Image (cartoon, rainbow, N blue to C red; front, side, top):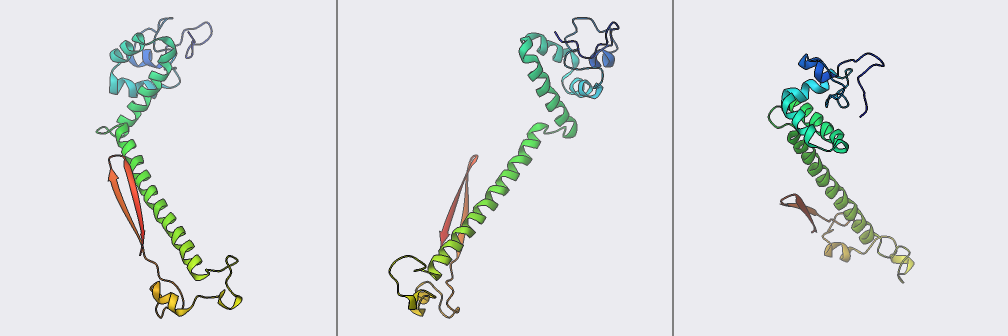
Length: 179
């Protein structure tokens, strides 16, 4: 067992034993995970879970899993101190909302890219491709503009992009329509 929180020759109590005002034994279950230099770490865990419950949990786990368990308890305790009602679930909800917002922004950006690509290919249909003559390689004829809804818009094609977002549990479906 590693002995962090203990000085050479002199037994320095771990943060848990200091807070609980008890003598820190050589085989203290808290000593490897709550060093004396980090008293707030154990204070939050003790406030949320209780020292007795933490002690029981650590003793029931194999030694190689205790570090991960303490890390999880510290994370949850710190989250509970910041947000007593929701704890880390509140942080997860905030992150999920950020993901939703970013996915929507990404879908809109992708729709804009596709819109610009469609607009570019309709504005320059024979740009280096096909067998079009040089006389019509510039802008398309006005009859093509009317078919695309260009009308009297000065030769520019008008395309409307509609993005619909459907939610199915945790999955989101983005439907992009070009009108």
